[in-house]
Length: 334
Image (cartoon, rainbow, N blue to C red; front, top):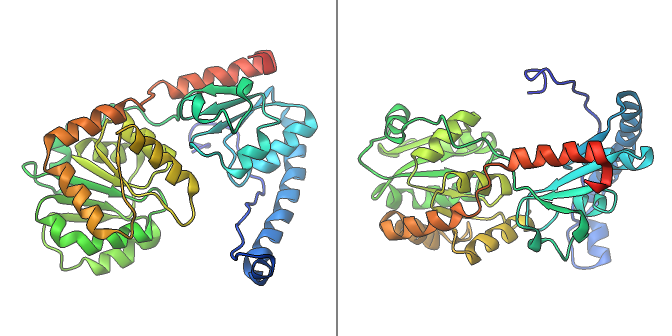
């Protein structure tokens, strides 16, 4: 992507912290594999910090935009040591560990939800509500034509199921378990993720017409699929929520409760606002009931669409770019 945009790109080492299983110290110490991975990544963070100091000294930026992630900590440490102003972006209701660590060094903290969600977690004076940038809801084509191109009927409802860019094994299993009942009321376009695509495909070989599974879709095709769907079943990542809000799509959110506390908080925020239905991926009957309720009632679709549209921020990219420019020019006074 960087090369295609003619942007200079340099990769550095990074690492993440994995929670160690167990209720007490001895149980945690017994989890040798996780401790070993954390130790390995601690070394990677140290190496990455040295790399970042060298690269930043050469590149001499006026400002750093840090989306954090595995490489975010080394970049943040190097920015602090070299005195470079930094903007970080937190898209989720509950900040990740890396953003919490870097927040004290950031000039400004851009956030994906309104600032009141973060007042107990970040310095208030640094918060700037920008929203989460996603591709705009234009150019996706007419929904009926998209359905036909994808091999679906234009006269039946279409349910889009997506577990995000990496897929979601538990969500995929839940959909397979209730697939016969779903196909009695709707068509299903199932984005499985690359890691789980073979398993899902093998388990749905004998499924009748009205079901299609893909590993993933390019950005433009993903936009078209969301626009063509009557409702969407998805995880509750901030990027996914931002996309659904842009298209004002009725959503059933199935947060990842095993590894992503931020998804639970994101889903709870939308549920409280009446902007989505929330179920667990282990509650197959509840998931089927939620999908059936949405697809069978126009009033419910309108209600969810109207409320989730309030979370749409089509100018998020412009807001974020303006903030980064302001910090580059004026530093912390931006």
